[in-house]
Image 1 (cartoon, rainbow, N blue to C red):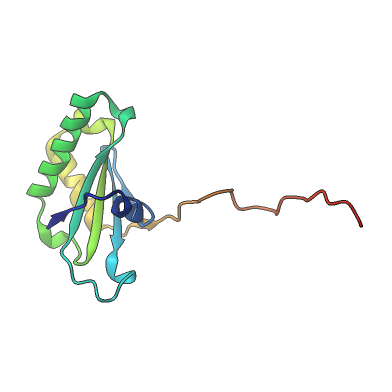
Image 2: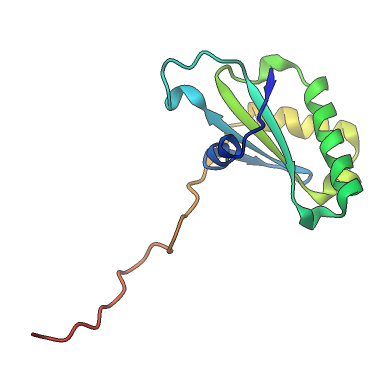
Length: 133
């Protein structure tokens, strides 16, 4: 298992499937759907935004997420996938065994696919104010 390190990889996974928990969001992307010749290992990344606390708190959340993945059975992860665990503030206070159970469930349950909207919201086309010729 490798780590995701480049921003472009994190952004690609962000457009994939998601599974929510109170302590984290699991994002996943099937790399073979993008490139049939991809035979690389499972890759996983960790991220925690600044709204979750100061640097020591964010680092503690990240350490807890890394430890969860270390204790997780790798059989639950699908081959040729990238995963990102996005930490939430609740990861600081939530019981570790409960978080581990949440992660197992997130890997086994069907994930819901969400297409992130880029740009304007879908709806009626904006009216144009064109003067007649």
